[in-house]
Amino acid sequence: MTQYIRFARGWEGIQYHLPPFPSAENAFLPSIALVSLSQGSGPAADPVVRPGERLREGQLIARGTSPNSSHVHAPIPGVLEEFRVVSLPDGTRGKVAVIRLGGSFDILGRRAESIPWQNTPDSEVLRVLEDKAVLNTFETCVPLAASLRSARKSGGGSLVVRLFDDDPTIALDGWASRERLGEVLEGASIVAKAMDAASVYLVHDEREWKGPGSAELGALFPKRDVAAVRATHRYPAGRRKQILAVLPRARKSEHATVLIDAITSLSAYEAVVRNQPILSRYVAVSGNAIASERILRVRVGTPIGDVFEECGGFTSRPTRIVSNGLLAGMALHDLDTPVTKYMKSLHVLDADACPHYEVRECAHCGRCLHVCPERLDPMLLTAAVEREQFSPTVAKALSLCQQCGCCAVVCPSRIPIPLIIREARSRSSGGNA
Ligand code: SF4
Ligand code: SF4
Image 1 (cartoon, rainbow, N blue to C red):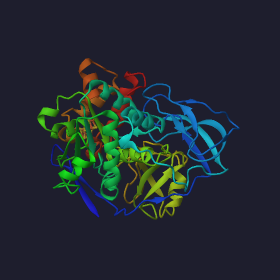
Image 2: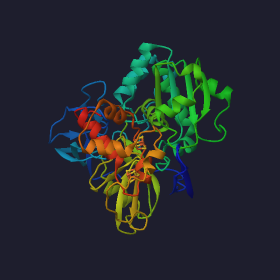
Image 3: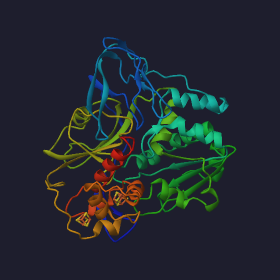
Image 4: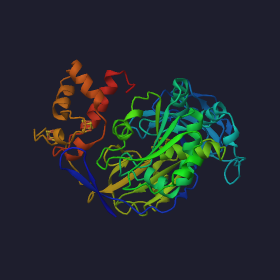
């Protein structure tokens, strides 16, 4: 199905192909898992196992070193062969635990005893979300428990659940909100309890709310104000700034606001109701160079080459593989790149969909300027970065960039503006941006 994305500013937009994506399927287990010790944007976790050790499925293999660093569990049973540095889906290189599949399964196919979370103290629910390593993939991927804990301290906070994809080409949060709405809403209720939210906003992108009515929502989120709110229909609609802008005016001043996406809700559901550490991710695989477009539930650490094999392999030579959306995603160049908890989608495109191109000099056409939702001047910004002119004005503009990708999509010179900005931000913050 062809869909059209209109940008928030200017007259431009893009067309994209949205596969029907019915139900998700479980992918085969990888024979080798490459499990990143840094599953989110925080520092890498500290290994608590050694090469040569036999690992159980779900065993803790690395402990988070700070509130922003998540624990890491063995996604498959097997032997830890070594630690190695590989390419990661966020464009960096990082340390992974190499696990060779073997031994018996503690979790696969077994029904774990669920936690009666409604009658469990809030603090205990919060601890479970932390122990099971639930990450919040709303923006940059961070441990969910850290933001819930700080919201609890402030008291009376709001939970905002985005039920659509930030980058519509990802098509995963939208799928989860359609096909798994019951679990997504129960997961949101668990998160609301863990942070003791006063109010819950379910932000959707439909003309009308098609979910449960107010009585049902009231029962699902007891003791909390709950409302469904429609997002704007132009991209980017799913970023923090745009979502806060559509909430009722009185709520905007609340500083204890936690924003999550549908996939994070689903993870909270699986961690608490199924009482399992998060060992797998849903990944939407699409593009004209892949044999079968589908949503797979893939073990964390599975090399993307295995994911493509599971989808029937390539039908033509891929010229571009992109993770996490065609607008704001990252190009991947190595089929051994492992699936991480922040991976949502993979697009595989051939030369028909993505012809080879060279980056050229800026043509000063101004198209990037007209589409930027932050009203930045990407042309001037990239020129300043190239000349290493980091004045306070440039630094402020760099920090305002939402990494939405609108500028790069319209640029006739194919200048990777968001990447230039992201790298400049990372350099100026010592690698922490
Ligand atoms: S400069 Fe940043 S905010 Fe502006 S269009 Fe480009 S990516 Fe989006
Ligand atoms: S869209 Fe590209 S070529 Fe046009 S002004 Fe912006 S950076 Fe230059």
